[in-house]
Image 1 (cartoon, each protein chain N blue to C red):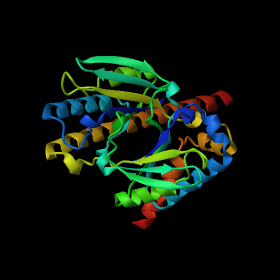
Image 2 (tube, chains in turn cyan, green):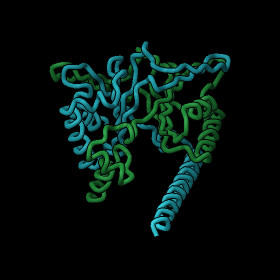
Image 3 (cartoon, chains in turn purple, orange):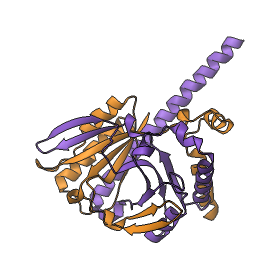
Image 4 (cartoon, rainbow over the protein chains, first blue to last red):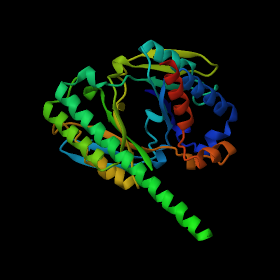
Length: 165
Length: 153
């Protein structure tokens, strides 16, 4: 996971602010394409600023406290991420170095590279089975949701067609 | 809306070793609940920052690489869920139920953040075209990557 870190100034920016720098957007687009064409890209996303975020603090004694954003005191904010599938940590670092400076060339910024825990790394066989079962349930639910969405949009089209006739 | 529910811990609770068996099973049960509720889109756990690295981009184009572990911070990302929910409140309710505390003295934090969706983007031709095709942000690149991988095999 290549995590783009945010800072207080960046955290306040809206998507419209971010899209305003056409040069950076163009460079990001090019970089995303490079990752994609190399076949290493698995996922990528950007997150809204922490003004739309919430934290839940789990304190000793089992107390839970909800704190709404923005988180102005924080140094460790996430702005977005890429997930890439590479052979080594070094390869991941090379890719991270090739990214355009995430907040523009005149701003200090940071990408953190972190390795995923894979099932084989840590878990006993029974736990792997459990996780595979969860993955199956998740896929089933998702395809069910997709089928339902398709059916309801087909229904709408049919209604629209019957209205026009 | 899609949200990223991030688990943050301090350096005492960085992952790298398995949690106690009971805690592990509790987490398995929780994962099963969110899967069965049909809201789980993705999840992942990250290895300790000792296996991580940071690339710092400095003004003027200089880049420096710093190897982990990153011991100075209390807010290390150890894992996350991506959930499809209707409201932030729904996400908060689920997050509060996550069995994260392994003991009475345990302290940790969840941060919930909203994803940028294609609806949030300014309506350029490119965005309108992708939206009409039912695509999400990033789908174009993910499809391109999939093609590249299939081409290689």
